[in-house]
Image 1 (cartoon, rainbow over the protein chains, first blue to last red):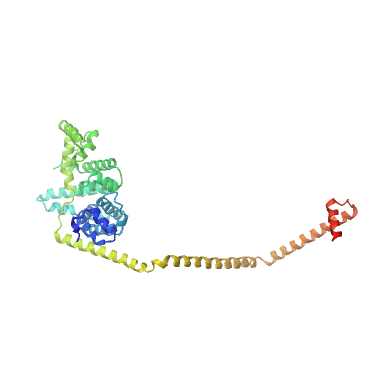
Image 2: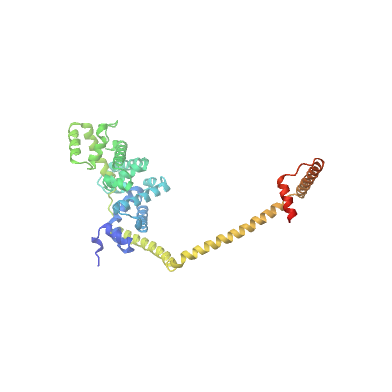
Length: 190
Length: 186
């Protein structure tokens, strides 16, 4: 009996490609939190993030035979998650970001409310979050993707380049522009 | 909490490096170069300070309860099972048919093509009949008359030729003589 949890991603994928779909399960366990958090960064809505990231697993599973091993499984999978999120954003337009104004949707505000800020500080922090999200929303999608994958997900620039199918130099430029834009829009809150 | 504006920029040639430095995306040599610059440049020092204050706050670090992840996992596996069931339904449907499917579909395609050709031919025939029928009777009559006049003209021309031959008899060519000879032999 093979211990599924000890197998590397590539070994699990190879078994799935041979028709043993049950070996996809450890991949779900390994990447579900990351997939969900990427989707949450893009959508700012828990239920939507859940749906989109779960759809990414279904799509990865359906297309597992197309994975050719030239990249690692997780960069291939992250690309699926990011594409699903960008498709969703394109279809929904501003809806997801506008929902930040709603009382139950603002994850950032909820997060900050848990801290020991005074009401004034909390209001300023909330405004800073709102401004940050507006700035992110206004960014070109490639800049935003590069920033979210680096800042929120901790992917290396090399991995982001693989996910986005571009060069590391281009990712550096995206990242720099995104950070500069955010700093500029948030400077008054620093 | 607020700071005096306008925005203070870092050195342009270092700004991108400072972002990479913040994210730890530099080798030792590059890091050393940036750190040397930072020790002498207040504007770049403030820039990196701003990044350290702002960027970690932007990441969503909300913790989710284990029950959330259990539910997430169960839902994901249920979706995967549904997809697998759907795919296997198709596989089951198509699997027994696989052996004879190709020749059967090929034969069916040829038969459909042949039938289509036959019916199209009939259609085109009917179309040409229809198109003839659609021509007004007056025009058809005119066409018949034209044929009649053409024939009459031709006969008239032949008569004139015969008359000319009768009036100016020419010496018979050699070929004609041989022809006559052959006819005589026969």
